[in-house]
Amino acid sequence: MENVLQHLRNLGFTDLEAKCLHVLAVNGTQTGYEIAKGLGVSRSNVYAALQKLAEKGAVLTSHGEPTVYQSVPIEEIGERMEAELQASIRYVKEHLPKQEAHRSEYFSLEGETKVIERIRSELRRAKEEAFCDLSPEEAKLLKDDIREAATQGVRVIVMPTREAGAGFYPFARKRVEGLKGQQGRKFALLIDRKLAIVGTRGVEDPTVAMLTEHPAMVEMLYNHFCSSVVFQELQQDMGTKLEDKYGKNFKKIIQKQIDGKVPEPKKMEEGKLIALKLHSGSETAAELGRLDEGVSSGKIMSDEAREDSPEKLEQGKRKKKK
Image (cartoon, rainbow, N blue to C red):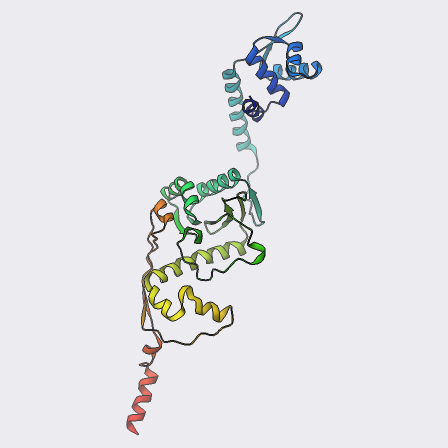
């Protein structure tokens, strides 16, 4: 019963109007007194609610004493309300002033339905590009929306989060004391390099998200995606060489630049910057397939390679003359 009343309220009926409609649907024709007695509320309030229902065309009233009421078939009520709603929507679309609002403020969303529906809406509105940093659970949930965006010509790039056990986060650090209690899988999206959406979902905490078109946040999120792509490709193509020189997950660089510990210098063999082809064997990629993007290749000279530079060769010639 409560679910029926809730949906009647969603259609615009007050709580008492919804209860009167439900009583009439169950018991058939009744007087206002009988309805008030059954609901345990005052007759004056019931008569006022029945009058409103009659004005809305939801109940029929008899002439005579006592006045009796009968509910209009719900199919008829639904058809009339649907027609009125569609007419109102058309009118508002035609006459409400339109303006492109720049969402430079930081807007917060809380709740599973609000967050997911907002993400889906923004993916549908994407025109050129969508970067998505998702765990397997969120990738599966948004799979159809992401694929639909791709079929509409939107360039979609999906990166797995660190919670997925994939991807590459060389500068990942332990949570600070104030953040240890926070749970949930992190996700991030960047739509058309204009709208940033960042949030958490799952575990015990409620689903929350922040969205903004503020240039600072958009630029930071774009740099995050670019760095993730570059580091993942470097790790896949040159993992052994990079680990030999910089330590696992670039630990030596972190020690030097962040912790202030200077690692022992070590020469690196000549390496190649391989053409990037974005792919991943992660669970997230299994949900969405993979996208390939080529980038021009080049070479990076090592310390040993620099020994044969023009300056070194010139010094060798001078020594031979002496």
